[in-house]
Amino acid sequence: MNKKNIPVEFVYQMFALIIAIIVVHAFYVSVIRPNAAQIIEEQNAAAAADSDYVRERRIPVLIKDLEQEACFILMFWALAIMGYKAVKVTRERRLLDVDLVPVAEGMRILPEDTREFARQVQQLPDDQQRMLLPRALLNALRRFNSTHSIQDVSSSTNTICESEAELLESELSMIRYISWAIPSIGFIGTVRGIGDALGQAHRAVQGDISGVTQSLGVAFNSTFIALLISIVLMFALHQLQLVQERLVFDTEGYAERNLLSHLQVH
Image (cartoon, rainbow, N blue to C red; front, side):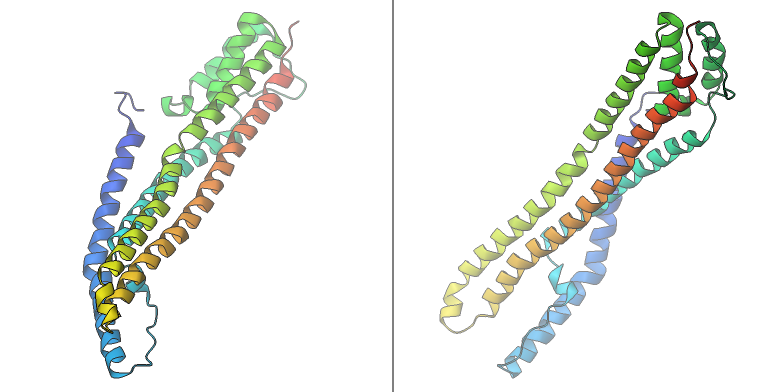
C-alpha cells in the first residue's frame, strides 16, 4: 500500500482486468470472428460440393466462441497479476546484493551496537523498508538489543520469514481461482454445445447434420482451449511460486550470514 493506504495492487488488478477485456474483445470482434465466419462459410460450400470433404480445424474456428474469449481474458489477467508479483520479487532480490549490515570479517556485534546498524537500515527509502529483508534485519537488531539472546533473534527471524512465505502463498489464491475457473468455463461451453446439438437432432434425422456438427465443435473446442490455457497458467504459477520461495529462503540465509553469525552477547 502507498502512503494513503490505497491498495495499489488491487487497483492494478482492476485496471489489468479492464484492459484485458477491452483488448481481447476488440481483437475478437475485428479479427477472430470475421475470419472464423469466412472459414466456416468456405468449408460449408466445400462440403456441399463434395460429400467426402473433411473440415480442417483452423485456429479462428477453434477459439471463436464466447467461452474461449472469456478464457483468454482470464488468462491475460492472471498473467498480468503474476507479472506484477514477479517484478516485486525481482526488486526485493536486488537488496540481497546490497551490504545492508556492513560488518567486517571477524567483527562482532554487541547489543549496544545494534542501534547504529539499525539506523543504517532505516535510511533506506520507505518502499524498501517494507520489503522482507530490511524488516527481518531491523527486527533482529531490535530483538537482540532488548533480549540479548542470539537464540531468540534466530527464532524471531525465522518466524518473520515463515510469515512472509505464508503471506505470499495466500496472495496467490486469486491466480489459483482463475486457473480453476478457466476449465469450468470450458465445461460450460461443452454443455452449451451439446445442448444446441440435441436441439438440432431432428435435422440430423432428416439428413442435415451440419448444425449438429457445428454445435459439437463448440462443445469440444471450448474445453480443449480452456485446458490448454489452464496448463500454461499452472506452469507460470509454479514458476512464480518457486521464485517467491527462493526469495524467502535466500533472505533467511542472508540474515544468518551477514548478521546472526556476527552477534555476540559479551
